[in-house]
Amino acid sequence: LSRGNVTTLNVALAPLPTFVFNGQVVKASTTNGIVNAQVKMTGTIYTYTTSANGNGMFSLPAIVADTYTINAGKWGYQTSCVPQSITQATTGIIIPLDSGYYDDFTFDFGWTVSGNATGGVWERGVPVGTNFLGTGDSNPGNDVGSDCGNEAFVTGNGGGAVSDDDVDGGFTLLTSPVFDLSGTSNPYVQYYRWFFNDGGSSTPNDSLLIYLNNGTSEVLVETATAATLANSNWLVGKIRVKSYLTPTATMMLKVRAGDSGQGHLVE
View 1 (cartoon, helix red, strand yellow):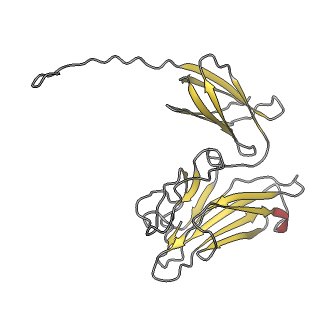
View 2 (view 1 turned 30 degrees about the horizontal axis):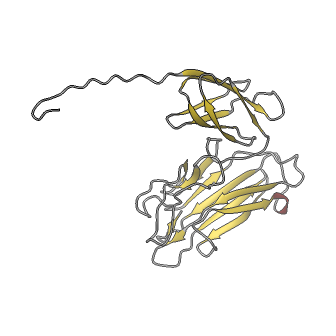
View 3 (view 1 turned 45 degrees about the vertical axis):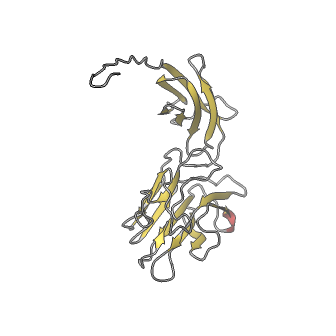
């Protein structure tokens, strides 16, 4: 390069070679394909998503060689996530899934959101952390570390100031898809939950309420308030269903985060 002169440099880029990649998602210990199973392949360069057909087969028409985390799942099965080095020489893979109900929110399995809150309603995504006066996290900055993926359901995920996207003006209710426990002898429901309630000009009085519903009856199984120990952490809850309800084929889990309207922060 010389001062005062424009130098043109032409750079030729060679496209990464791509190839077709096929696989099948099957019920564990069988060759039965899982209809409409969802597949996500996360590499160092690209992420690909697709769904299986009626035989559990899936095909990605143009991927690049890389090391991927391959997630496969469907409601009613336990999501699989395994690392796999994929090259053009890699033949189609078989992904077995065990039966059961599991959701780390890598995929959208159909949880529904309702309520009357004017802000901070439930949404699925990678949590964006916020902090309250330097004392600790209000909205978590990460998902539970022991599961696959990085996603969670959070009450508002806009980030920014601590008050920008917390629950306001009412409640937001998250409801699971229906799950069948009718054929189980002693079922448990396990989950991880986070709750934060602080700020305002009076004692915080908001709550996180968790319910079980069997299609006929609904019961409260956990209450978290500002006084609950170890808030602002991912805490495990484990519920013996028969201690509350008769297990049925139409079970649901519901999570309600509410703002009582007195200016407190709720996440």
